[in-house]
Length: 126
Length: 177
Image 1: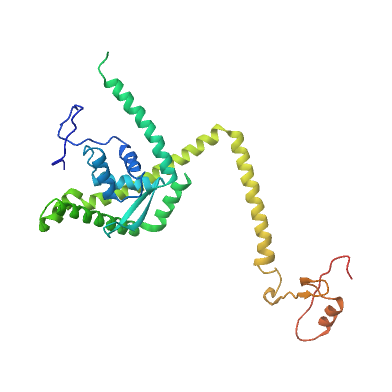
Image 2: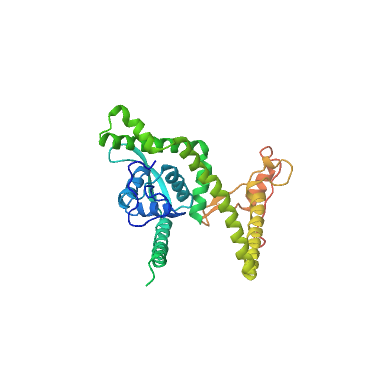
């Protein structure tokens, strides 16, 4: 699974440093919404985007990605459509709905607050 | 909320088979992308598929988990929506009462109108041989009226003529003769 992936470097965790980062509950959904912000993409493209944007810290497992996409479809935050990819392969493209866009904006500010609070708590007291 | 229910309904209408077919096609396209990536990284052609499949993961397990995402969430969401609805109704009894009364009146009115239309327009009149009843109308050129009326003399003539009709009946506005 984790072969060849870089480990998290700047933050030490209790468990093995060579393991890729685990997703917290609901994180993956937000990341998927974010990856679709610029435009429609297919599952492979979403995984590539997240891997690249996270400097390969996030290695999205398809066993998590596919169910997450289904949950987003179900909530009406994304829609799916078959289209030709640039290299002429039929792929299922996902696109943000207006509701999904709203959800992304809300999730973004929640995450920023969460990250700031975590950083404050974890920071050495001074 | 509406959108979410719409997605659920579409999924239900599409059926399990269509869902499985689409997922299979989606994953096979995904695998092809992975194969291309393997080839691009210099994996020999014979090994590229296996390499891609290893990175892609267990196809059957992914499909299973994707299916589960619907069945579980669907029921959970339904229960959540029902509970939320019940709570918000309980919180505002006045609003709930008004809503229930409006719905009752609207439903009642609709039912009444429908049963009237059903009897008069759609259904047959509750008389013997209703299928043989006809309504005669004409366009009255004198008054420029469509679907209109006949002179009383015409009615009398029609009644006297044997054969065409078993019986003839006319109605008239009270102020006309």
